[in-house]
Length: 239
Ligand SMILES: NC(=O)c1ccc[n+]([C@@H]2O[C@H](COP(=O)([O-])OP(=O)(O)OC[C@H]3O[C@@H](n4cnc5c(N)ncnc54)[C@H](OP(=O)(O)O)[C@@H]3O)[C@@H](O)[C@H]2O)c1
Image (cartoon, rainbow, N blue to C red; front, side, top):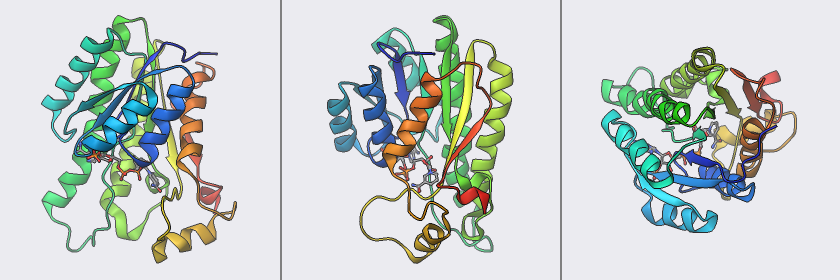
């Protein structure tokens, strides 16, 4: 088993929502958190303050910014033990109307950045003797959603990237994924989301804290688990 006490963990897209929950949970387990954000500076500073970590800005659509980000994290903390790739773009797109720009906006963050963040983090982790990576995929990477074909394709890519990197980076680094089902924040629930919640065997939506606890399980549990995708979806993927 692995303890997070004193470990340095980078969480992308950690200013708000699920990313913030992950940062707070891992900090409560003793980790030092590098809180990544892009546009949400005020929220990121609040998250970093709440978890005793430090905030770092980067547009992950740009690989040069990813290299700079991980250089800054290594300079600040001197090491990196774990990475949680959480940042993503999610929006409905009519497949008959989708432009090249729409496709690239989703894939550059959800898939390309996940790969290059893993690459840059792995180089630092190997200098420190190894590490652990958790990629936040999606139920949409395992099951098709008609209004989100580019998103689902990008998350299916994250699933295969997780399998491939787990083989490539073994035995020093474990690479696993989480596939969240419906995780809801706030009061207003769009009709399409409410329909998915009604289909969920557990009869409710999930919470950011539940995704965070599952990330913690993969970062703190046995190092013999690698290349796996854990659905945290109230059983929705069983339908
Ligand atoms: N919510 C759900 O029900 C659900 C379901 C399945 C899977 N997931 C997955 O779980 C993860 C978190 O979900 P969420 O709903 O909490 O996410 P979110 O709020 O939609 O996005 C998380 C963060 O991604 C960052 N981001 C977007 N574009 C970026 C870019 N170009 N460069 C750097 N950062 C960028 C944003 O940072 P800034 O705000 O700082 O710009 C944003 O705060 C995502 O991977 C998502 O696909 C969520």
